[in-house]
Every structure is written in C-alpha cells, then in structure tokens.
Amino acid sequence: MGSTERILVALFRQESHSFVPGATTLADFERFGIPTGSDVLRRAGNREIDGYRDAAEEFGVELVPALDAKAQSGPPLDDATFEHLAGRVCDAISLNRDRIDGVMLGLHGAMVTDSLDDAEGEVLARARAIVGPDIPIATTLDLHTHMTRRMGETADILAGYQTCPHVDLRRTGEVAMRTLIRTIRGEVEPVVSQRKVRMMTGAETHDDRRFPNREVIAALHEAERDPRVLAASVFCTQPWLDISELGWTVVIVTDRDPDLGRSLADEIAMKAWSLRDHYLVKKTDVHEAIDTALASDGVFALSEGSDSTTAGGLGDGNLLLKALLDRGVDVPCLLMVSDPAAAAACAQAGVGARVTTPLGGSANPAFYSPVEVTGTVATLTDGRYMNHYGGIRAVDMGPTALLQVGSISIMVTTHRPPMVDYEAYLSVGADPREMRIVQPKSAGAYLEYYEQIATCIDLDVPGPSGSDLTALPFKRIERPLWPWDPDLQDPW
Ligand SMILES: [Zn+2]
Image 1: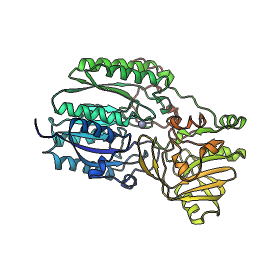
Image 2: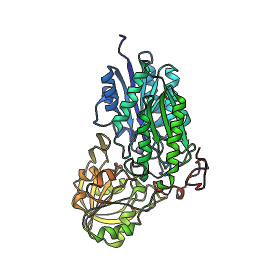
Image 3: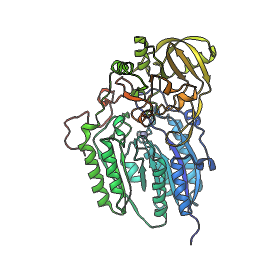
Image 4: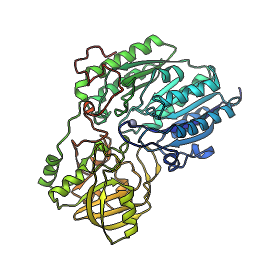
C-alpha cells in the first residue's frame, strides 16, 4: 500500500451579470470571510465541501486546503480582484506542487472580469500550467455555468449541479471528488465530451422538478446509470451574460469512451433543443398580480425576479413598491430594497424616527429610478444572519432597517442578500407568514421556500435579469442563437 494521496482544494466563486453597473471587488469577497487552511474544510451541511470530505474520508485521502473565496452574484470582477484571488489559488498549487496527487477547484462557472469572458477557463489553464499534464484537475460547477471549450479541454473532470433551486451541492462535490480519487488511483481514465446548443433561456424554467427541465435532468440521471459514465451535467447557463460562446452545454465525462460521451451529449442536447418553446417564460402584469392578491385571503409572494439578487441584480429594483404605493394598497406588505444611502439615513435617524428618503433605483438607472418614501424606522440591525439556502453560510447585509411606510414594511439593506428564501426578512423581525403580500427577488428558485407559505406569482416587470432575453441590450453574443433567431433549425 502506498502513502496517502493528497488533493489540493480551492474554491473561487462568483456569478457575474453583464447588465448591472459597477464591479465586484475584493471587499465583496472579504465580506464572506475568505477562509484559508483548515477553515476551508469546515463542514457546512450541504455544500461542495461536505461532498469533497465525504469521498476523501471514504477513500482515506488527505485534503490540502487552500482558500474559499466567494462573493454574491453581481457585476464582473475588476481585473485586480481576479488577479489577486486567482494568484492565491495558483500560489497554493505551486507551493504544494510536489506533494499533491490531484487538484479540486470549486468554481461557479459564470465568472467574468473586466478583461476575461472565461474566468474559470483562465483559472483552470493557469492551474494546468503549474501541475502539468499528469496531475488530474477536477472542478465542481453551478448549473448556470457558462461552459467554454477551454474549460472542457483543460479540466479532467467536470461535474455540475443537477438541481434548480440548487440543493445538490454535496452530491456534486462527492461525485467530482470520488472520480478524481479513482483517476489518481488508475481505476478510471476520464474523457470529457461536450456539446454546445445554440439556445439561451430565462432562469424561471430551469427548475429541475418541473416540465420542461425535469425531462432534461431525468436524461442526465439515465445517462449516469451506465457505469462508463462518470458524471453527466447540463449547463443551462447564467442568461444575463453578454459574451461570446454563450449557450446551453451538455458535458458527459466517461471512462475512456469518447464515442459514448459524444452520443449522450448530443442526445441530451437535442432533447433540450426540442423542448425549447417550453422554456419561454410567461409572467404576470404587476397590477394583475396585486388584484389577484387583494381579491382573496392568504399570503401572496410576488417575485420581482428581474432584480434577482442571486442572479446578479443589485436589489435596488422598486417597481412592485412603486405599484403598491401608486395604488395606496393598505394590506400588510413586506418588500426589500437594497440602498446604502437610505439604510444610512434610517440608521442615523434611529428607531421610531420618521424618515423621508429616495429609495432604490439609483444603482442601476438603466432600469429603475428612485421612489421617495416617508416612513417610520421600525427596527435597525447589523444585517448579519445565517442563511441555509444550499448549505449554511453567513450573510452580511450591512446596516439594515425595517422602514414602515403605511402598511408596507420595507427591509432597506446596505448590501444585497439572497432573496430566494425569507431568512433575511426573519432576521430583521418581519415574518412573511403574517403578511398579505411579500416580495422575493428571485427568478424561480424562491418557489422552493415560498410555495410552502404563499401563492406564488412571477411579476412581469423590467429589470437587468428580465426573462425576455431578446428585450435586453445584448451586443456581443454569437448569432445565430435562439430565441434571438427564432427560426434557427440547426442547434449545433
Ligand atoms: Zn445557479
């Protein structure tokens, strides 16, 4: 028996968005702490790291932790931030080059920088340059990965989430780590096959539990039943990236069977293509949605998905707020707006004070404009809470106020939190279950949480993460691409 194998583990994750101004900076990563050393390996319940550890412990492999850098979805990284963090990943690989047998990179897959459309391909290429061809590299990726040819040619093993909302992070980590260990031990020889499909779709229809995406995900599960298939993934892609090489991609990793990989990738890609018309998102006019909510009892979740903070929206969208104010709605409502200046004004005024402030709409003026509100500061918090979406993580919204404007409670945050679940609301003492109208800001994934407490309606309001992709200011995508080219016949 040989000595224990060692696998270096580094995570570097952010999902970028082309239609929000500004840049994601090092401070945005530092707000999540950037754990290093043994802190990287701390279990989080249902994250990739738990899956990495499950497989490593089962096979008796030692994990060598480097760092875990993540930031909330948002604008592209500035180059200095990317170079700093990619540099730290590469320094760790270089430092351990002679004592490791494999590299595991936890990436998102849709990171863009000022200069790079394919940031993950760049990280993988730099890692490859350090370790050479003989040390295998595996990566775990989000379902919304912008998959590139270079990523597929550089990594030995790629495994993506097969769920949306993303709840199989641990499974994904376990599959990738298990395959990496078996590769190191010479039990398998992974070959990556990928098929790009000339289609893009809004995120609301990526739900793996519903038609049509249920059919595509089922095909992945079916493919994985074959022992020659090591990992099967479909990357539905972050829809709001204005870059070349955009499109859905199916990736099949086989044990030295590229013919099988290619035919499965083509078959699953064709299944997605044949269902394309069902991926068009239908939403409800905001006033129609309010009418529906007012016409009956119970809680209604009206999601402003076009400002989804887990898709990169800045959280400053205020179109539901504006509609409720315009109509003088007087039932209990709970909304969220990220606006650092308004949050500071509330904090300065103090609990119980009356505040008049412009709210929202200033961060992304291409889509929104500020709405002036006058209300009473009900609560003030430091904005820190634990979030359980896809495993446990600490969230820091910065100084946060609950501003009461008539019957409307507005959570005013300094930094945008995930608005998929309602833990942010609970953290400021507001309970959606006691409201009539509550606002998620999520393109689909919120259903996992809100369907249990509310009737859910997707609002048809403009915003950077709108689901009618052809209405957004894309300039750099490669055509033909469906649905921009609705009559496209050949999806390859
Ligand atoms: Zn995603």
